[in-house]
Length: 222
Image (cartoon, rainbow, N blue to C red; front, side, top):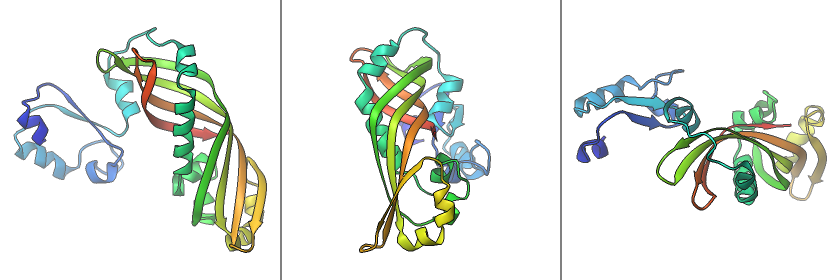
């Protein structure tokens, strides 16, 4: 709000955050009454529109530029970057997000104490789809994209006693191909293998053909 006032910014403003608990009313993408009051008290006249993700902002609000991205360049020039970002995203999953990723709603209640996730992709990106392209500046665009990462392997490390307690549940998990028990360190390693489908907003430089940022909206393990 200080930035808006100090720089005398005019026009509509997009407010984008995934932190809905602090900024939005419960179960709605609408500003919390306290934040509404703060905006009013600051004398800000701009229309401020809330969004809960970069992807939803792009879907609704930005002009589209058709045919400005070459799919093959998008694939060839940025394969390693997208692989790295996907690996880091998978390794950071926890709780309900991990359960959703595995399409196993009760995973986080059966196994709430995940020690670590270790991921690797040994094949790479495939079948990229570009749904739309949105101009951000002269050379920078956002790309609404859908692509697959094939050859994903990831290990979920849990306490060996949690494994023994939930062995029947674990044995039936989709994509599970290996289980290693380290009795010396009391760790069970659950090995998974498959592919992921990813829906993401990608920041792309038209001049250099490089991706500078990736916001994953949805990711599915298969």
